Each structure stands twice: as structure tokens, then as C-alpha cells.
Amino acid sequence: MTEVPEWMRPPRLEGWFADDLDHLPEAPRHTELIDGALVFMMFPRRAWHGRAVSALLFALTEQAPAGVEVEREMTTRLDERNRLEPDLLVTTAPYDPDSTFYPPDQVLLVVEVVSPESAHRDRTVKLRKYAEAGIANYWRVEDEDGSPVVHAYELDEPARSYVPTGIHRREMRTTTPFTIKLDLDGLVPGRKS
Image (cartoon, rainbow, N blue to C red; front, side):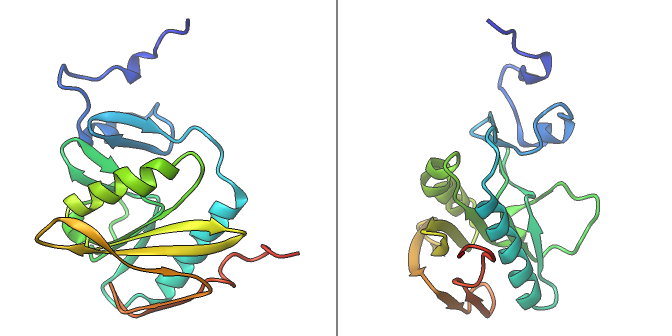
């Protein structure tokens, strides 16, 4: 049996806290904290996933109004025990080169591009966590025969839960969190031979 590396041992009896992630240089690059437990992305991502994330990053950045930034693979500190890393987030926080996370009150939208490794978390755990933290919009992007399909959700503020606002195929048009138009069929280049 392999011994657990010392850095993986929680620094206190209560376990891990969100701010501990800033002090774990040995941790894998994509490490999240969910309910005080470290979660590592252990499998290589598919090319489709990378292309979908990159295309969405560029499309959202191009359409974002002044005062809105789009970040890739940056964590959001939901509370003391939860620090999740969406594939993309849209924030009202001004660009800060030293920032390592965003608080949920500065996040307008989180986007998770589903991979086999993250599917359960993206469809259930993160859906609930982001809503409880008060993030207004959540998109879950699924691969449907090579084309991205966006499952869009909006926060029901009093209930602190998401309600689905649509399943978008081929194209997406929305006004939340800002006016966005996406050609979903053309989003992932090279998907057709």
C-alpha cells in the first residue's frame, strides 16, 4: 500500500478550508474543495472538452460588456468549505493578476463543460452548490454527437435553487447575464470530417 503524501493530510482536525488551496503547491493543477474534501481532476481531458472551453471563452469575452471579465479555470470561493473550479466564469471583478479566486457575489455565470470524470459533479453537486452560493446563472455544456448542447439555469433567489431556462442546440440566444448569441454548431472547430 502506498503511503499518503504529507501534503495531502489536512492541516487541522476540522479538515480543509477554502483558503488552504492557496498553500498547496504540490496539489495537482485542477484541485477543488467540495465539502472540505480535496477533489483532483485525475484523467486527461478530451480534445473536444478543450476546444469547447476555448471557443466559449473567446465567444463570451468578445460579447461581454465593459466591466465584465471572463476567466478560464479560476476557482470561486463559495464558502469556508467549498472552492470550486468551473471551466469558465463570468465576473464583475476587475482584472487582478494576483487573484486566485472570486467570491460568488462577483460571479454572474459559471460554465461547466461535462467530461466523463466530472459528469456526476457537474449535473448534481455543482448545480446545487452554485445555486446555494447565490450565483445567478449556470450553464452545463454536454457533448451530443460532437455538438455542444447548453443546459441553461437561472437562480430562483428566494429558493436558492436553479430553474432550467432552456436546452440550447444549434444556437443560443440569451439576455442573461448579458446579451449573448452563440452558434453552437460552429463552436467546436474540426468536429466534422
